[in-house]
Structures are given as C-alpha cells and as structure tokens.
Image: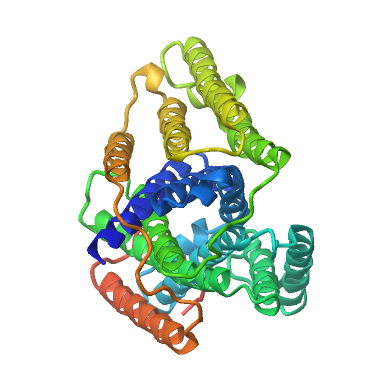
Amino acid sequence: MKNQWISILIVGMTLGTAWAIRGQFGHEQGAAWAGAIGALALVIVSKRKDWYKKMFLIALSSAVGWGTTGMISYGIVVGYGRSDNFPNALYGLLMLLVIGGLFGLLGGGLTGLTLESTNQKRVKWGCLLAEMAVGGVIVYYLLVGQLGILMTPPRSEAWAVCLGAGLAMIWHMARNDYRSPLRVALITAMGAGFGFAFGNFLQIFGNVLEINFNMWNVMEYSIGFFGGISLAYSVLSSEWPEESYVPARWENYSALLIVYVFIPLIIFSESLGFAKLLNDFSDFANPENTALVSSLAAGFILITVAVVALYKLFKSGILLVRKDVILLFALHFAAYIMVSYIVKGAFAGKFLLNHHLYWVNFIIILYLMLKQFPAFFENLVSEINGKKLVIYFIGIVIIITLLVLISINIHGEMGGAHDRFNL
C-alpha cells in the first residue's frame, strides 16, 4: 500500500507542477499541455507495456479533457472566495469546487475511456464527441439562456458548456458499461474540485501572512496536485482489460502531432511570438533583442522536442518501451518549464522563485520514476460505490465550509475580492 502511494504521489506532483506552469500561458492550450504531461506520468508509473504502445493516444485524450475545460472563466470566482462575508466566500469556494470538478471530470473521464478501449470493445469516439458537443449546447442554453443561471457574471459562462459535455460523457459511459472510466471520472472530479477550493484558501492564507511568493501559483499547483493524485488513485485501484487496444500507426502519428506539435504551436503563437514578447518586454532594456532571442529560443526548444518524438515513433513503431516513454515525458515536461522561464523574461535576467521550484519537482519526479515503485493495488475495484462517493462529497463540502469560516475570520477587506450577492 505504501509503495502504491508513492506512484500516486508522482502523478500528483507532475500534474501539480504542470498546472502551475500552465498559469504562465492559461487558456485551453496551456491546460491541454499540462493534462498531457500528467497522463504520461500515469502511463509510466503503471508499468503496463500495452499502455506504452498507446501513450500518445492517452496523452491526447487527457489533453482534450483538461484542455476543453480551460475555456472556463474563474478569475472572478476566485475573487468571491476572497470576500470577507460568509455567503459570498462560501459561494466562491463552492463554485471553485464545481469548476475544478469539471476539469477532473472531463480530464479523468476521457483518459479512463482511452485506457478501457480494447480491440473487442473500442470506444466510439465520434459518437461520444458528438453527444458531448450536443450536451454542451443544450445545457448551456437551458441553464444560461433560458433559466438565467449565471455563475460568473458578467464574464463567460462556459462552465455550463463543460457541464453539459460532462453529463453527456457520463450518460455514454453508463449505457455502454464503462464502469472503470466512470469511476475515474467521478473520483478525479472530486479531487480536482477540492484542490481548486483548497488552493483558493491557501492563496488567501498566504496573502494574509504576506508571504513573498506567487500564491496564485500555489492555488494552481493545488488543483493539479489533488487532481493528479485522485486520477492516479482511481486508475490504479480500478480493474482494466488485460490487453488494451493497439493503435494503428496513423493514430499514433496523429496523436503525436497534436500533442507535441499542434498544442505547443498554439502556445508559441499566443505567448511566445516576437510581437507578443516585444509588447510584454516593453519595460526591459533593449526589448527588441530580448524578444527576438526569446522567441527563437522557444521555437528551437519546441521544434527539437517534436523532432525527437517523431524520430522515436518512426524508429520504434508501436514497440515503445518504458525508456522511450520516460524520455518523451521528460522532454515534454522540461520544454514546458523552459518556455515558462522564457515567457517571463529569462533572457533579460528575470527569474522567479516558483520557476526554480518547477525544476525541483521535475528532479524529484524523475528520481522516483526511475525507482519503479509498485503501482496497482492488490484488490482492484470493478463497481462504483455510490454511497461512499456521496459520503466523500459531503465530507468535502463540510471541509470547504470550515475553510470559509477560518478564512473570513483571519482577514478583512482584501484586494481582488468580489461579492456575488449584495448583503
């Protein structure tokens, strides 16, 4: 049991670190890259050779799940949590529970479906995605358009789209008897939701103590860490087919191109292009040269990682082994850390403490991965214990309520606070 928790910790630290890095880029593409890195860590600790063969598909499904929910606006919800009165602060943390839950629901659910897919029972991805798209539209226009239920006015209410997509995914899983993926989706949802709400509390606590650190980054690490450990726990304690689906060569290449080329290309376009960096570095000395060197360096890093990944897949075909997965994971992860330095002005001599801590996490994660701790639990679960999940959820709500009571009693009016309700 102890050694399994080390494997779970590895995934938690990985997704936590990647999600903290995501804060430098934001939006769907940043969340997608973080989700892919977390999924690769899960594949490595599992030590399942059949999962190595479809590592790119697993990374892609995780990227799509975590990335889709990256459209949700939550900045003002964080502000509600910083309120100095109980109703507004409770509303803020509970809505972060919902938003974080949607991240985990889609990220964990799509990852679980990819793990479950076999030659005998393949997931009908076209049907599933169509159902999720329709579900997103229906729920959005029902809740927001017709009933006027708003979480984040006047900002985007994209949470409703993700809620509809998540409900459609659950319905698809239930009627097609995908029990383990459904269990993973629900447990990861609770873990990520708690992580987001708890992270907001940590941010407030750090601000009250005037800790000289990026406490927003602490909140981001929290959702990734708790989302990662809940994802790993639910996967490693669930039953899975003994032999997974072996992807065709074109499927691996397509997934690789999306994960290692397309997603980084969007991040480069949105955050690392010369014009964008020139604007961001306008206060630096000689901003033109700094922006040019930074953009070229970022492009070189991303291209190098993509070329290595393509070469490895071309050379190995579907016969990817553990060392290949670790190499591609390390390169993808390290590239994300390096471009996070660049986007904040590393070539102008600007370095942040939280960036150095990314490397500390990276080194610890690789060290633990190479030790190869046991992953799967001895007694695997094939059924969903609904009663236990409800008890866990009630427990999470009670903990969040206690955190709110502590929060409103340790601070007065805070910068960035908002009130959803006028009391």
